[in-house]
Image (tube, rainbow, N blue to C red; front, side):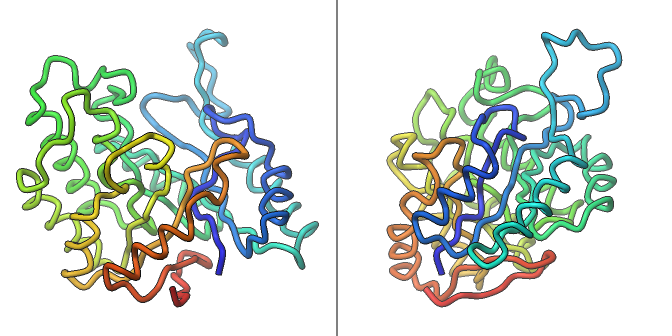
Length: 274
């Protein structure tokens, strides 16, 4: 099974990759299945129909949900025999935005939801706004505590996306795993208890990271705790990202003792042998 379960298109604010072109490219590379997972980040972006009080030039928008759902349905019909196409979103969650995501989830028939943390207290990681004024210990520990709170209070998701993504934006280098292992173990225990999973995000290659995303230590911990649900995602925003390094990701999972990778149908995992 060749599947990519982390794919962004022109419906995400940080991508211009046309949805139908994604499909054509996936078919040309022999992909069996993909899931669109465009960005929703309540707290730092406004909804597609909410322009009240915002200057148009300053607006960063979430997905236009009705158009998104309609477009995916149309493309599922057009490409039915050539590619399995699933509808998902990437929920960029924060503690205070849980109710907004609960309402959104209830409105559409999602196949798959990635729960990610891109910002905390409406402060972004990518521009160092969240990290500024904190020690490396403070911002790393705060990140994992936020994630633990989310998994303890929200269950309408499928997998945790790029679980240790704070590493990508850590200008001080990689914070020692042993320092955050206790809270990471609590996160993974709750994920497993709730029947959820994690993703292996192959974007670590293009970001030039020295370890996988999440790290090999986290993958080992998840396996040791009994975790089995793992999806593979390129986190693609451009054609050159789509489907990248999936073979390497599968080889790594096999090496670590995993037997399966998963796709999803209506929020239920489907297991495929590695």
